[in-house]
Image (cartoon, rainbow, N blue to C red; front, side, top):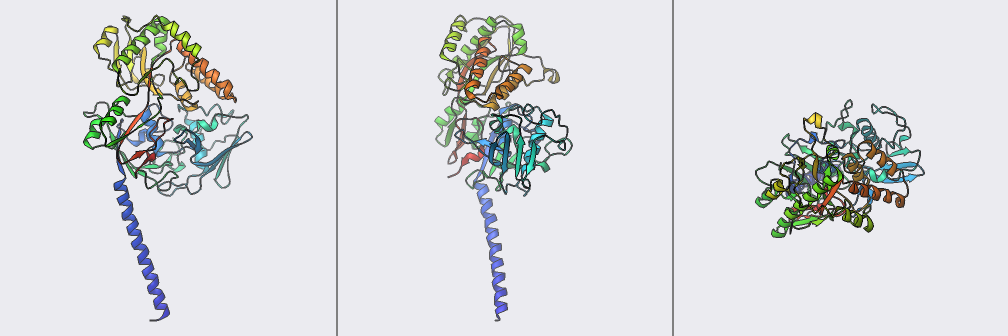
Length: 521
């Protein structure tokens, strides 16, 4: 056999070995996906095309988007500001500089770079309407962008698409923390319609997962993107969203018992206390709970504020609080609340302010009959508005369970009559969270509403010294309760349950099911 022939045979054998190795790796990948496939109970039945970072009103929308898109930076599980799509972010004087990760690609191999980050900012300015931060007060001063081609003064892409720099007229202390909100997720330019800027490709995403199979019924299949910086063979490789709408014949917890679903999320329609008690009774699941950052309260709408005086609002709020706490007596995780922020959190009231409010509200024990006819919208599934005691306390009122958010309802467009009262559940935080403050400024939550709320938020964000900002927040908090715009009811943790042997490494500081943080041993 000649040397050339030997060399040729060696090359052929090497190629065959490489092909065999490829076949094995593909087989291993399929086995990995089969092993790491999780079925998620999801409280909404709609196509992926219904989700957009510019339209986040409800918690399940945030969770879906946070798993298929990534922002420039994010919060770690322990609450620290860390890198995400921006490998590095820094201030140089008044210039914000983002260095985008190298080799970050969508599932089909499209590179994500600083041009995509620039498009994210411009799209947010052009479309507007997002709820977790106000870019318009910061970027492109004096400009009204209509298209992506319009220039934004001070914004430049540099170093062949690796770096995005934004020059501001003055320091912006909240700019980086605000960008952790999924409202500011980076969407690849080629996934957008060039005219409308609507998302038309949910396969090529910037997040740990992409949409592999879509369905108008909400049965969406998400697959892991191995090109993503959060990717790990230990994370779920496939997520199957199983819609469990409010009118479903079976609850998500029943489906968990039957083995139909593997995860019941924080945003599931099942009350948090039901999930906590289910986990205690079922050793085959693991329970994850956050700190008590789930706030329950009574919010008076603008209509209710006009119709009802302060004493009436206090009486109504305290009566609803008494009924709620009685229905939840002895349930796991609940603690009565006398303020909006957690008592040890930033923005919490002083002991003197709490004492003053308690004295003022002492006369409203919450046991009187409210004869005023009211329209009450209830977003809290665990509160039974048909309870006999509720009807006795509110004999002339209509209490309706409805998934709407105060301040984010276009009553005229939707053909609805504005209610007087919302019974609501929402996120709070122990830490100063500009995304949540922005969201609540959009939702008629504080005593300042509409333009006044947004003006207050703009002033707040311009204060560089935190020691001066927190008193501003505390005063707004106190005024909101003093004027009885909001009556606090309770706090509880958010809860997620997951079938063993999966282990959750989710955040205790923030709500939101970041499902790539689930891990198989």
